[in-house]
Amino acid sequence: MAKTLPELRNLIDALDQQLLVLLNQRAGLAHEVGEIKKVEGSTIFRPEREAQVIAGLQAGNPGPLKRESVASIWREIMSACRALEAPQRVAYLGPAGTFSEQAALQFFGSSIERMPCGSIDEVFRATAAGSAQYGVVPMENSTEGMVSRSLDLFLTSPLHVIGETSLLVRHNLLRQSDSLEGITAVYAHPQALAQCQHWLNTHLPHAERHAAASNAEGARLASTNPAWAGIASERAGSEFGLHVVAHAIQDDAYNRTRFAVVCLPQTLPAPEASGRDCVSLIVSVPNRPGAVHDLLVPLKKHGVSMTRFESRPARSGQWEYYFYIDIQGHISQPHVAAALQELQTLCAFYKVLGTYPVSE
Image (cartoon, rainbow, N blue to C red; front, side, top):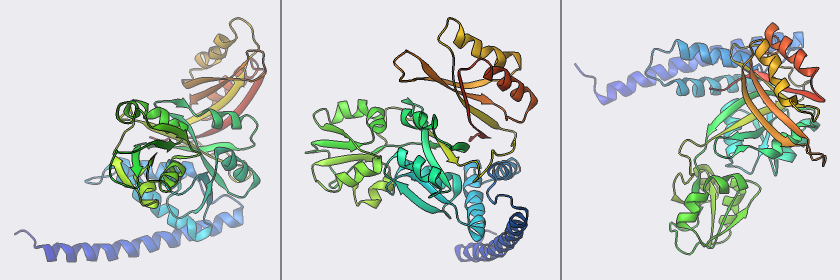
C-alpha cells in the first residue's frame, strides 16, 4: 500500500535526525584528525585526499543522487568539518555574485572566510602577502581561451597551483526594469562581452559596451542607472536587485571557465598524487629553428601526454614567447619526473606552476 504524504514526511524527518547524528559523529572524528595534524605539524586541508574521498563515493553511489550532487553534498560536509579547526580565508575576484566567488565556493564549500578583491592582480597580491591563505583565479575559458592577465602574473608570483575547478558559465542580461527597451549601455568584464557579442550584435546593436572589473561590478553599475544593463550571473542579479531580462545569452551554450586555486608553498605544499593529476609549467626556449619542436621530444620519449600548449609574448621586444604547458600525471611519477628533467635542460626559462588533482 502506498504511503501517504504525512507518512513520507515523518520518514524523511526521522532520516534527517539520523543524518544529523552521523554528521556530528563525522565532525568529531574530523576534529580528532585535526588535532593529530596539529601535533605533527601537517596541513589540515588536503585537496588530493578530498578528491579521492568524493571519487570513491561517486563510484559506489547506488543512486538516485547524481554524481555532481554527491560531490556538492560531501564538499559542503568536508568544508564544515574543516571550519571547526580553522576556516580558510579565500581571495577571489569580487564583488559578491561573481563567477570567481562561485568557483571558490564550488572548490572549498561555503564554510570559508570570503575575501572579494577588485582585480586579479589584487587576488595574487593578497594571497602572496598572506592576507588570504588561498586565491581563486580564472585561467581559461572554452570560448575565449586563456585569461592572459592570470598567465602574466604567474611569471613572477611566488604562488603555486594546488587545485582547479571548472564552472559552467551562463551569462544573463540584468537591468532595473524587465525590458530590453531603452538600454543605452552594457557593462561587463571584457571576457563576458566577448563571449556574448553575437547576442549583443543581434539584440542590442546600438548599445555601448563598457568593460568592468568583473561581471558583478557590471551588475552593480547597472543598478545605478535605469538605462544601463549588466551581464552577470543570476546570483549577481539577486545581489543588486535586478531583473533577468534575458537568460543564457552567451554565444556558446556549453561555455565553461577553468579556475586555478593558488597559495604559497609554505601554506600548502604540492598535493600528493591522487590518480588524476596535472602538472602546469611555464617555459621559454632560445629563438632558434626547431626549438619549440624540441620541447615535445622529452614528453614523447617518456610517454607523457600534453593536454594544453599556449603561448604568450615575453614583451622583450625580441619576438620571444613564453609557453604555458599542462601535462598529465604527477611530478612524483618517475616517467613524468624524467621527462621534466630532460625538458628543463632545453629551456632558457623553466617554472613549475604546480602539480594538482584535475577537476572533472
